[in-house]
Image 1 (cartoon, helix red, strand yellow):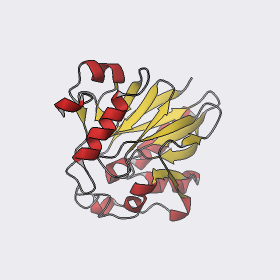
Image 2 (cartoon, one colour):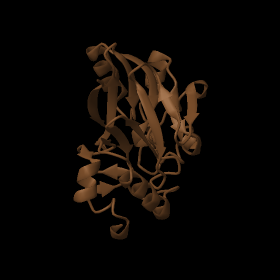
Image 3 (spheres, one colour):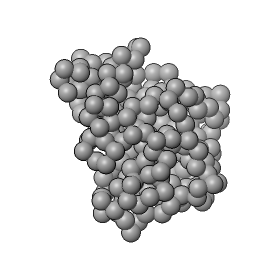
Image 4 (cartoon, one colour):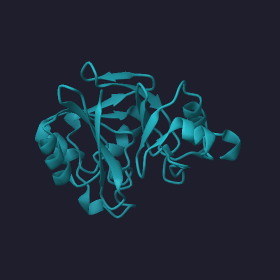
Length: 214
């Protein structure tokens, strides 16, 4: 059973997740800011980071990645379509969000890409299915492990991510939300900001997994 530690970081309180298995192997999802805090939590938990996974490449979700890579020499995984954003202070919105002076380019030697429906496996337990959900950004993706879903800024509790940033697209977002709503079974959803939700809650009570209400 995976252990999940949520760390809201930065002025925008993006959720960074430390996800570890029974052997204390771990992946870091969306290390958005406060690298010293993230690194201290990793040390405190006694976990061994194997990779960084980005749900998308807006700066508030990878702002601490350069320092984490420098410390642990681990790869960073991002969807192919968001790959150019990681190495651009402008395209990643660091400048537009007022964080241009804080931008640090992650070492390109450690950047890896993934595609839709790819399985990312780092240990027997740390295995995630990539679900490409563009709309908030071209390469926005969710990571599913059994009945757990990391949704980034595609789906929030009773809300969705913005589509008015560069690379956003409301038509893609509609399709992505329909895809999430059609997933088999229920999932606990760990979102990119705010509190957790479930797919079942969003299907029954949320206004966005029903296409006609978007």
